[in-house]
Image (cartoon, helix red, strand yellow):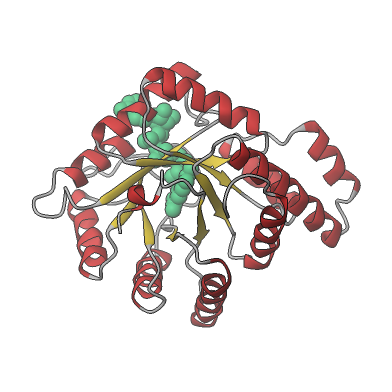
Length: 299
Ligand SMILES: Cc1cc2nc3c(=O)[nH]c(=O)nc-3n(C[C@H](O)[C@H](O)[C@H](O)COP(=O)(O)OP(=O)(O)OC[C@H]3O[C@@H](n4cnc5c(N)ncnc54)[C@H](O)[C@@H]3O)c2cc1C
């Protein structure tokens, strides 16, 4: 099923992002976690990230295929332009489509490990929009693909300003993206302000908030530094006090995420995309909390 068709049916859509594990054993644990999630919460779709390079790329594709075929869940496979020629991208997409995975989150990606600026492949793409345009224009499969892109409530770190950021976000819709998933954020006002800017600029497609449960202070500091998201002062103060108590940090993160999700859904967000970081226990606790906390929307 095309992911865009799941939204707008009068109920919140819940999706869960996993990254391809490094070992076969970790992969088995991942299938078990997704399977458990399926039994208890009937996820609308599972997304599988695409590695920056090397073996995790192949593993990501096989994890996506297996979740689709064995667990019979809707899968959104991430795909990036990093270090890929157009031909290589086509091969990955053909493999996914051949296995029945018809939804792709089309991303530019970042420079492979080691950092620095993104350098496009000589026979590849410079921006996500070019990838979306290319996939849409492909004979036979282009029109059938479910295509999404990324967006940034607090702007992409390379964007000089909000206007420029929104211009390129809108270009994704114009190229054929049918939904957007946001970068993680911790202040809902940033998400709603970006929705407002987007609607004014002409964005009409669903813009899905991405929520990351905090499970470690150093990890959230690292992630937010990388992606340019801020940690609100109130949250940072609470985390700082408990920095050396992992259990308390997790509890603070879960409580914050539940409040964020309930507020997002009550204010009309189309659903929640959870960055699970493969720790589905925290996500399951958050889901139970949302269930208990929701007053109006059907769960
Ligand atoms: C929901 C989500 C999932 C992600 N999953 C993955 C993953 O699986 N694997 C991974 O490696 N990374 C992933 N990322 C990270 C992502 O690859 C980075 O954020 C990357 O820096 C930008 O990707 P993009 O698709 O938004 O790029 P783009 O849309 O290409 O934007 C990159 C920058 O270029 C600017 N820009 C865009 N188009 C143009 C243009 N035509 N001319 C000039 N400037 C332009 C934008 O404003 C922005 O500053 C994910 C991010 C999100 C939010």
